[in-house]
Image (cartoon, rainbow, N blue to C red; front, top):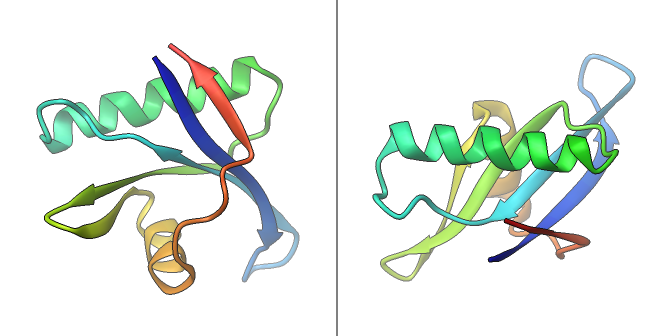
Length: 92
């Protein structure tokens, strides 16, 4: 299965930069426990491919709405900015 994701770097509110990944995926069960597991697996996959990932989130559609799931401050940021353009993919 191929998972699209965006790997981005933005200025941090505390100075410096933050590298983050947003994955176009959701857990099959739609349970938070499984979403956490999936997010960790995908973030680790991106790291194994040489990317720095400080924070990560899932982006998926639910009842016609885009939902972000992951690090709360990243979810807030994405909720204001929208879904980024996909820059990479992972094969799982």
